[in-house]
Image (tube, rainbow, N blue to C red; front, side, top):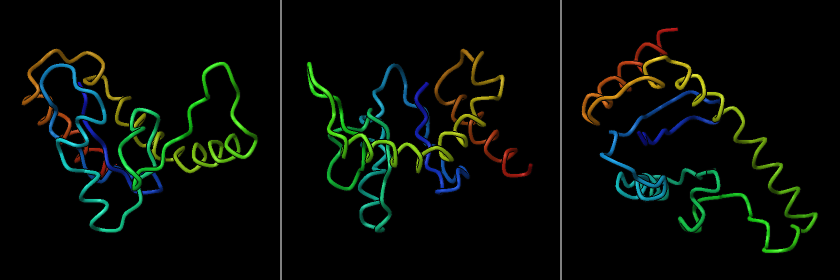
Length: 126
């Protein structure tokens, strides 16, 4: 299941996408739901992981290590700062993933979308 998650900088989950059928790459799912385009129009910067490399100038991703080489010290520092800024977001996503249903569910994407939205509602009540 590949549900796209939009969070606030503090890790609060703001939105969950519908679950696409089958295997779907993160960047493909984000483009299908127009997340990048909407954030760009609204002026909301996007901090993402390496799965979103190539998403465009509006998306900040960590730099890859060059083949048979090392990152420059400056780029290592930038990657560390990006990871630090994304840490609360990752904790928010991990909190959702802690629900047993996400680890054991074997159902249709439509049902999973309903389940994910229900879990989000319950998480907001905590």
